[in-house]
Image (cartoon, rainbow, N blue to C red; front, side):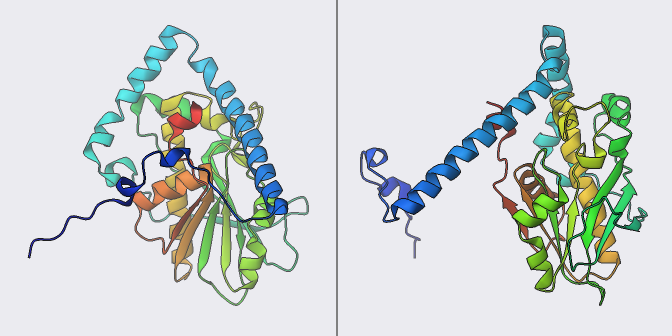
Length: 285
Protein backbone atom coordinates (compact mmCIF):
# COMPACT_ATOMS: atom_id res chain seq x y z
CA UNK A 1 0.00 0.00 0.00
CA UNK A 2 1.37 3.40 -0.96
CA UNK A 3 1.68 5.64 2.10
CA UNK A 4 -0.54 8.72 2.06
CA UNK A 5 1.32 12.02 2.15
CA UNK A 6 0.55 14.04 5.28
CA UNK A 7 -0.04 17.74 4.75
CA UNK A 8 1.75 19.88 7.35
CA UNK A 9 -0.69 21.72 9.62
CA UNK A 10 0.80 25.09 8.72
CA UNK A 11 -0.22 24.54 5.09
CA UNK A 12 -3.85 24.13 6.16
CA UNK A 13 -4.15 27.49 7.96
CA UNK A 14 -6.69 29.86 6.38
CA UNK A 15 -5.49 32.71 4.21
CA UNK A 16 -4.81 35.84 6.23
CA UNK A 17 -4.32 33.82 9.43
CA UNK A 18 -1.49 36.06 10.61
CA UNK A 19 -3.89 39.04 10.70
CA UNK A 20 -6.33 37.30 13.07
CA UNK A 21 -6.49 38.40 16.71
CA UNK A 22 -4.83 36.08 19.22
CA UNK A 23 -7.70 36.01 21.69
CA UNK A 24 -7.49 34.60 25.19
CA UNK A 25 -9.82 34.11 28.16
CA UNK A 26 -7.36 35.15 30.83
CA UNK A 27 -8.45 37.88 33.22
CA UNK A 28 -7.15 41.43 33.52
CA UNK A 29 -4.89 40.51 36.45
CA UNK A 30 -3.10 37.89 34.38
CA UNK A 31 -2.96 40.18 31.35
CA UNK A 32 -1.11 42.70 33.51
CA UNK A 33 1.32 40.04 34.67
CA UNK A 34 1.98 38.92 31.09
CA UNK A 35 2.49 42.53 29.97
CA UNK A 36 4.83 43.30 32.90
CA UNK A 37 6.82 40.12 32.28
CA UNK A 38 7.17 40.90 28.57
CA UNK A 39 8.23 44.48 29.34
CA UNK A 40 10.76 43.30 31.91
CA UNK A 41 12.11 40.75 29.45
CA UNK A 42 12.59 43.45 26.81
CA UNK A 43 14.44 45.70 29.26
CA UNK A 44 16.65 42.86 30.43
CA UNK A 45 17.32 41.69 26.87
CA UNK A 46 18.25 45.22 25.77
CA UNK A 47 20.59 45.63 28.75
CA UNK A 48 22.33 42.31 28.08
CA UNK A 49 22.59 43.11 24.37
CA UNK A 50 24.21 46.44 25.21
CA UNK A 51 26.75 44.76 27.52
CA UNK A 52 27.64 42.17 24.88
CA UNK A 53 27.95 44.77 22.09
CA UNK A 54 30.11 47.00 24.27
CA UNK A 55 32.41 44.05 24.99
CA UNK A 56 32.78 42.99 21.35
CA UNK A 57 32.89 46.29 19.44
CA UNK A 58 36.45 47.37 20.38
CA UNK A 59 37.77 44.25 18.64
CA UNK A 60 35.83 44.93 15.42
CA UNK A 61 36.10 48.70 14.96
CA UNK A 62 38.81 48.81 12.29
CA UNK A 63 38.81 47.09 8.91
CA UNK A 64 42.02 45.26 9.80
CA UNK A 65 40.55 43.87 13.01
CA UNK A 66 37.35 42.83 11.24
CA UNK A 67 39.24 41.04 8.45
CA UNK A 68 41.46 39.21 10.95
CA UNK A 69 38.40 38.07 12.89
CA UNK A 70 36.69 36.85 9.73
CA UNK A 71 39.80 34.93 8.72
CA UNK A 72 39.98 33.27 12.12
CA UNK A 73 36.38 32.16 11.80
CA UNK A 74 37.17 30.37 8.53
CA UNK A 75 39.13 27.86 10.60
CA UNK A 76 35.90 26.53 12.14
CA UNK A 77 34.17 25.94 8.80
CA UNK A 78 35.83 22.55 8.40
CA UNK A 79 34.28 21.39 11.67
CA UNK A 80 30.85 22.70 10.70
CA UNK A 81 31.07 20.97 7.31
CA UNK A 82 32.24 17.68 8.83
CA UNK A 83 29.35 17.61 11.30
CA UNK A 84 31.40 15.44 13.66
CA UNK A 85 30.79 16.39 17.29
CA UNK A 86 33.76 14.29 18.46
CA UNK A 87 36.14 16.44 16.42
CA UNK A 88 34.64 19.72 17.58
CA UNK A 89 33.99 18.90 21.23
CA UNK A 90 37.23 17.23 22.26
CA UNK A 91 36.72 14.74 25.07
CA UNK A 92 38.54 15.76 28.29
CA UNK A 93 40.85 13.39 30.16
CA UNK A 94 39.07 11.10 32.61
CA UNK A 95 41.36 11.69 35.59
CA UNK A 96 41.08 15.44 36.27
CA UNK A 97 41.39 15.86 40.07
CA UNK A 98 38.59 17.84 41.75
CA UNK A 99 39.27 19.71 44.98
CA UNK A 100 36.55 19.81 47.65
CA UNK A 101 36.15 22.38 50.43
CA UNK A 102 33.48 23.54 52.87
CA UNK A 103 31.80 26.83 52.10
CA UNK A 104 33.51 29.74 53.86
CA UNK A 105 31.57 32.28 55.95
CA UNK A 106 31.35 34.80 53.12
CA UNK A 107 30.15 32.20 50.60
CA UNK A 108 26.56 31.21 49.92
CA UNK A 109 25.33 28.34 52.08
CA UNK A 110 21.64 27.41 51.83
CA UNK A 111 20.12 26.69 55.23
CA UNK A 112 19.56 23.01 55.99
CA UNK A 113 21.55 21.79 52.99
CA UNK A 114 24.98 20.15 53.03
CA UNK A 115 26.97 22.08 50.44
CA UNK A 116 30.54 21.91 49.20
CA UNK A 117 32.54 24.19 46.96
CA UNK A 118 34.38 22.28 44.25
CA UNK A 119 37.08 23.33 41.80
CA UNK A 120 39.55 21.87 39.32
CA UNK A 121 42.26 23.15 37.00
CA UNK A 122 40.72 23.05 33.54
CA UNK A 123 43.04 21.34 31.03
CA UNK A 124 41.10 22.87 28.11
CA UNK A 125 43.17 23.77 25.04
CA UNK A 126 41.70 26.04 22.33
CA UNK A 127 40.78 24.36 19.07
CA UNK A 128 42.18 27.26 17.03
CA UNK A 129 46.02 27.19 17.14
CA UNK A 130 46.28 30.98 16.85
CA UNK A 131 44.39 31.39 20.12
CA UNK A 132 46.58 29.13 22.25
CA UNK A 133 48.49 32.03 23.78
CA UNK A 134 45.80 34.73 23.94
CA UNK A 135 43.11 32.45 25.38
CA UNK A 136 45.48 30.80 27.83
CA UNK A 137 46.59 34.12 29.31
CA UNK A 138 43.36 34.40 31.33
CA UNK A 139 44.62 32.95 34.61
CA UNK A 140 41.39 33.16 36.62
CA UNK A 141 39.49 31.30 33.92
CA UNK A 142 41.79 28.29 34.19
CA UNK A 143 40.10 27.17 37.42
CA UNK A 144 36.56 25.79 37.16
CA UNK A 145 34.20 26.30 40.12
CA UNK A 146 30.91 24.78 41.28
CA UNK A 147 28.66 24.56 44.35
CA UNK A 148 27.43 21.07 45.21
CA UNK A 149 24.23 20.35 47.18
CA UNK A 150 25.04 16.84 48.40
CA UNK A 151 23.00 14.50 50.61
CA UNK A 152 25.14 13.07 53.45
CA UNK A 153 23.52 9.63 53.06
CA UNK A 154 25.28 9.05 49.75
CA UNK A 155 25.24 10.11 46.09
CA UNK A 156 21.83 10.78 44.56
CA UNK A 157 20.65 11.41 40.99
CA UNK A 158 22.05 14.86 40.25
CA UNK A 159 21.04 17.87 38.19
CA UNK A 160 23.78 20.13 36.85
CA UNK A 161 22.56 23.73 36.52
CA UNK A 162 24.19 26.28 34.17
CA UNK A 163 23.47 29.96 34.81
CA UNK A 164 22.72 32.70 32.30
CA UNK A 165 25.08 35.34 30.94
CA UNK A 166 26.49 37.65 33.61
CA UNK A 167 24.38 35.99 36.32
CA UNK A 168 26.60 33.43 38.09
CA UNK A 169 25.27 34.07 41.62
CA UNK A 170 24.64 30.77 43.40
CA UNK A 171 22.12 32.45 45.71
CA UNK A 172 20.01 34.02 42.93
CA UNK A 173 19.96 30.94 40.71
CA UNK A 174 19.23 28.71 43.68
CA UNK A 175 16.16 30.77 44.63
CA UNK A 176 14.88 31.50 41.13
CA UNK A 177 14.89 27.85 40.12
CA UNK A 178 13.85 26.36 43.48
CA UNK A 179 16.99 24.24 43.68
CA UNK A 180 16.71 23.75 47.49
CA UNK A 181 13.19 22.37 46.86
CA UNK A 182 14.67 19.91 44.34
CA UNK A 183 17.27 18.92 46.95
CA UNK A 184 14.57 18.30 49.53
CA UNK A 185 12.81 16.05 47.01
CA UNK A 186 15.83 13.76 47.20
CA UNK A 187 18.11 14.95 44.41
CA UNK A 188 21.62 16.39 44.52
CA UNK A 189 22.35 19.62 42.62
CA UNK A 190 25.57 20.99 41.11
CA UNK A 191 25.60 24.72 40.26
CA UNK A 192 28.39 25.27 37.74
CA UNK A 193 30.18 28.58 37.08
CA UNK A 194 30.66 29.13 33.34
CA UNK A 195 33.97 30.42 31.90
CA UNK A 196 34.78 34.10 32.57
CA UNK A 197 32.04 34.40 35.21
CA UNK A 198 32.17 34.80 38.99
CA UNK A 199 35.55 33.73 40.40
CA UNK A 200 36.64 32.93 36.81
CA UNK A 201 36.40 36.63 35.89
CA UNK A 202 39.71 38.42 35.39
CA UNK A 203 40.42 41.19 37.88
CA UNK A 204 40.57 43.89 35.18
CA UNK A 205 37.25 42.91 33.59
CA UNK A 206 34.43 45.41 34.31
CA UNK A 207 31.72 42.80 35.01
CA UNK A 208 31.15 39.07 35.28
CA UNK A 209 30.97 37.44 31.85
CA UNK A 210 32.80 40.25 30.04
CA UNK A 211 35.57 37.91 28.91
CA UNK A 212 33.12 35.57 27.20
CA UNK A 213 32.62 38.05 24.34
CA UNK A 214 35.45 40.56 24.76
CA UNK A 215 37.97 39.09 22.28
CA UNK A 216 35.81 38.50 19.23
CA UNK A 217 33.85 35.67 17.67
CA UNK A 218 36.68 33.13 17.47
CA UNK A 219 37.34 33.64 21.19
CA UNK A 220 33.60 33.22 21.81
CA UNK A 221 33.69 29.87 20.00
CA UNK A 222 36.46 28.71 22.31
CA UNK A 223 34.59 29.90 25.42
CA UNK A 224 31.59 27.78 24.39
CA UNK A 225 33.83 24.80 23.68
CA UNK A 226 35.46 25.20 27.10
CA UNK A 227 32.08 25.44 28.82
CA UNK A 228 31.01 22.10 27.32
CA UNK A 229 34.45 20.63 28.05
CA UNK A 230 34.33 21.63 31.72
CA UNK A 231 30.76 20.36 32.20
CA UNK A 232 31.85 16.97 30.88
CA UNK A 233 34.58 16.92 33.54
CA UNK A 234 31.95 17.66 36.20
CA UNK A 235 29.93 14.75 34.83
CA UNK A 236 32.98 12.49 35.04
CA UNK A 237 33.45 13.52 38.68
CA UNK A 238 29.81 12.87 39.62
CA UNK A 239 29.55 9.50 37.88
CA UNK A 240 32.90 8.37 39.33
CA UNK A 241 31.62 9.26 42.83
CA UNK A 242 28.74 6.82 42.45
CA UNK A 243 25.96 9.06 41.09
CA UNK A 244 23.58 6.81 39.15
CA UNK A 245 22.39 9.40 36.61
CA UNK A 246 23.04 13.03 35.73
CA UNK A 247 20.83 15.58 33.97
CA UNK A 248 21.61 19.12 32.83
CA UNK A 249 19.55 22.30 32.69
CA UNK A 250 20.54 25.86 31.91
CA UNK A 251 19.15 29.36 31.48
CA UNK A 252 19.75 31.58 28.42
CA UNK A 253 23.48 31.21 27.68
CA UNK A 254 23.46 28.22 30.01
CA UNK A 255 20.59 26.84 27.91
CA UNK A 256 22.73 27.19 24.79
CA UNK A 257 25.58 25.33 26.48
CA UNK A 258 23.10 22.67 27.60
CA UNK A 259 21.98 22.15 23.99
CA UNK A 260 25.58 21.96 22.77
CA UNK A 261 26.37 19.41 25.49
CA UNK A 262 23.50 17.22 24.26
CA UNK A 263 25.19 17.10 20.83
CA UNK A 264 28.58 16.26 22.34
CA UNK A 265 27.77 13.74 25.07
CA UNK A 266 25.20 10.94 25.31
CA UNK A 267 25.45 10.43 29.07
CA UNK A 268 22.96 13.02 30.41
CA UNK A 269 19.66 11.39 31.36
CA UNK A 270 17.92 14.62 30.37
CA UNK A 271 18.78 18.08 29.04
CA UNK A 272 16.43 21.03 29.64
CA UNK A 273 17.45 24.26 27.86
CA UNK A 274 15.51 27.01 29.67
CA UNK A 275 14.92 30.11 27.45
CA UNK A 276 18.05 29.17 25.49
CA UNK A 277 19.92 31.35 23.04
CA UNK A 278 19.19 29.69 19.69
CA UNK A 279 21.18 31.89 17.31
CA UNK A 280 24.02 34.07 18.62
CA UNK A 281 23.97 36.10 15.40
CA UNK A 282 20.27 36.90 15.71
CA UNK A 283 20.75 37.71 19.37
CA UNK A 284 23.48 40.23 18.49
CA UNK A 285 21.20 41.86 15.91
